[in-house]
Amino acid sequence: MVKAGHETDVSTLSSVWRLITQLAVLPVLLTALSCSRGTELPSVREGLLDLSDTLTLGLTRLAGTERICVFRSDGEGYVNNVLLSKFKGTYYCMWQSSLRDEDSPDTHVVFAVSPDGRSWSEPRLMAAPTDSCFVSPGGWLQRGDSLAAVLNYVDAADRSRGGTAWVCVTGDGAIWTSPCPLLMADGTAMDGILEQDPQLLPGGRTVGAAHFRPGLQVQPIYTDDPSGLRGWRAAGFPAGDGKPLEPSQFRRPDGVLVMIFRDQASSFAKLASVSSDNGESWSPTVLTGIPDSRSKQCGGNLPDGRSFMVWNPTGGKSRRALVLALSDDGVCFDRAWILAGPSDLTPRRHAGRYKTLGYNYPKAFVEDDALWIALSENKEDAVLFRVPLNTP
View 1: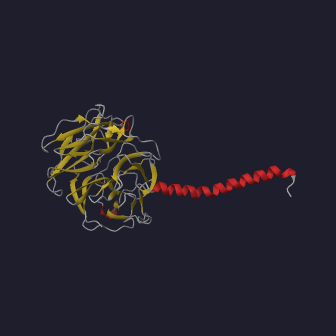
View 2: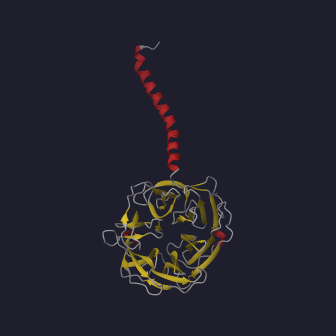
View 3: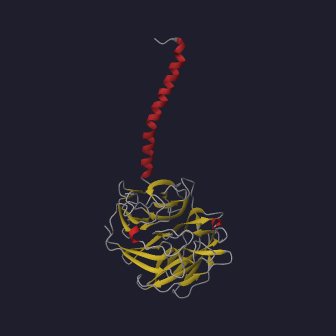
């Protein structure tokens, strides 16, 4: 029998017990929600990467991979943001170059050409800096009978203030137009810099991202203009986890687009967002379990529809491992190979600000039965990796 004076205590104990029961169930509910959410977001198969193995990440080499040097810096000591395209039978490779430091006032864009992707011309000037801006590459837009080089003019006094995107266009590879602004849908110039691998969807829409001013606020964008030079619109993109920067994207077999981001908040994991309406709106970014080095990556699709990622999945600041991963469904990346590791790197030859050792900012495209990956080694040399498409 319970005494009257203890009725309040019993009621309190009952409430506490209900709370404890609810709290005990909460982790299970959260786990279930996380698993449900994970079906939409990319992941790597558990145990695929061994981060304790700093030489290979526990991965094997991919047979048939070629390493090709486009440009080895001698007189100029800084090379970064290497980008590749092919137009009318000729390969084009551009990158930013400067005498010593990253994003210094003398930073300009050069390009080289090749008939086969293996033997390259001497670099030629694509765009020079202005009195107030340096220039970096914003990607290639190859559409029909024209090739456009996107050029980001960035505030040289304070690069965190961002810049604007311009284009030079050619119809024959020999004569290029003067730079003109990339245009939004309302006809105004894009007040931001374009990220480097916009993706052409099967229906003709181009999807990418820009970093708009003020500052460098990342924003998915899209255009239905066939040239990709105008008609750009900002997509819906609510705030989410981390500090997303420098995304790339791939397409799942069900048509959902997946955008993966560098997380500047130093989680050393990829952020991801998805779109089910061809890039017009995106989910908030969510921190994935995909390890990263807080660096740019590239994503895309092979001709058979498989999704690929190329990045530095070290889980720390090191970029001294270059990895290719594949996924059949665009959700679980369950196969991966190391393309190059620390033992393959040449010693650094030049001093300079932000001269990160390793395989910097890979960007890829598919051509001639191969996946071509362009990057900067040690931010000194422009290098390509050619991976045959008979990858299992």
